[in-house]
Length: 495
Image (cartoon, rainbow, N blue to C red; front, top):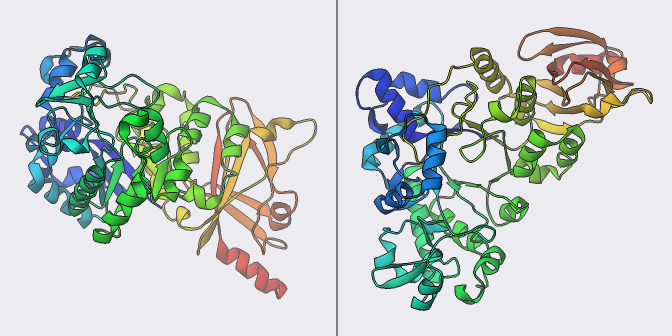
């Protein structure tokens, strides 16, 4: 199972430069810093924001008072030097020279590979910067307008090199002022997208596709109507991914996906898609809502990315108070599919930094939270290689708190593992019948994966009414039972 660790590359390198008292680029990151990134349990690093940022986009950002206000709120003492422009306003898919250029990225990839860790990079399929070379070299890759469009709606169109282009947008919000819209229905654009992704595949092991639902035929047609031209017979992603995998068959495709389109994107070729629905339920809803989400088809769930934060979402420490954050972390760490962790999440950072900025405010690390995450991520790695099953929780008619319990199991070659979480702010009690054969007639010892706490229980109880649990608010069990114990019980009975 893929476990992704997202790094804000520009900010990370800046902090390393301060730490080591010299400029640090991707090609000369000290080995100990790579060791910290390639931590136990992480198998993929996402270096967010490595491509050339747009000077034109930066000028637009510097003139946007609302945007500047958000920068000041996140970073007291903000100066113009702290603003680098958006990494999603891409000037060119070449590693920014300030980060070490292509040679630096190659060295970084080699360092990660030496530690058994894969590298993924960004791709933005919907738009490019207003000074991207395609505006002059490949204008037919972009969505064009007319002089009348520009005069009528200057917030939606811009002129460059004598041609009017549409500004990038999605169907639900006003256009973004700093980007130009690509035409997902253009055959030339699709060819160029394949070319770009093949180039990324030459430099990385995977690609995270920003707002991946926007080029889908039905979404793009709804956004742009007749202006986009005839709807192609083939959808965007099957066309593009199929051709890229002719060159890079193992390239991992990860989709940032919203609007419940993750299933459609999986069918169109993505390995993993954001599970925004689960995120919203963990943050804003209750155990019953989370459980309903986990009843989805297992094949679908294996293609999801579970997360509690990323650079687009608020920090988990700011939205999940106290022990709720740990309970939610245990959930996402032990569910099928990929897991995404965000640099700073483990330490309890609370400030969501706008991606335009080069540095972030000082925040005191929560060392207990950091230790918890370190143990959790490492401990669940072998667990997630097994077979997952959602479990029922039962309780007495006069005590319905069992409805606040979430439970599932993993079965690996060596161990049975059980996860039970009280996803509520009040105590909960209930029973969890365990699905493993060979429990009856055996004394069983369940052991905590993080703390080694042992629970001795009769196998008849575990298989029959089920393991009794009494958990305080937001508390959880992460337990293992060696399969050898269960097998020996079967042999004792002559099964």
